[in-house]
Image 1 (tube, rainbow, N blue to C red):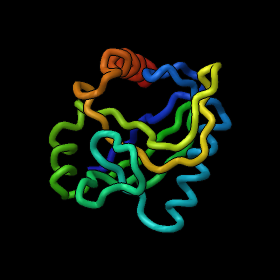
Image 2 (tube, rainbow, N blue to C red):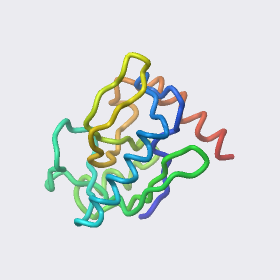
Image 3 (tube, rainbow, N blue to C red):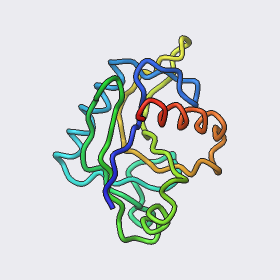
Image 4 (cartoon, rainbow, N blue to C red):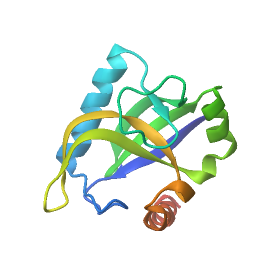
Length: 144
């Protein structure tokens, strides 16, 4: 299964109380392109705090990323792995989020050192569930 997902809304206070500005979003794309040139960019279910992805837990491949109308978008391909099958069977329960290294400045702007990958996060297991739900509803409104 291949899907196009919205990953980051630029210059928008997200569910984690962070703002990804143009600089951060362009860094995501640049780092993704470098990683893609070196090989496959894998993602996992959940959001592990390590890099690289654990191949035993891989659920999808990030095939492409770009910026369109102020949104970082990605083409995701689910894999035929145990976690990939979970993702495919429950795709509407997941949002996609970057795994990166960096810091959040006092003004909530994200300052990235490096982009790692995009992970699939189950809304109901996410501590920011209600905020993500609000943003998901906003995303649907923006895309309709």
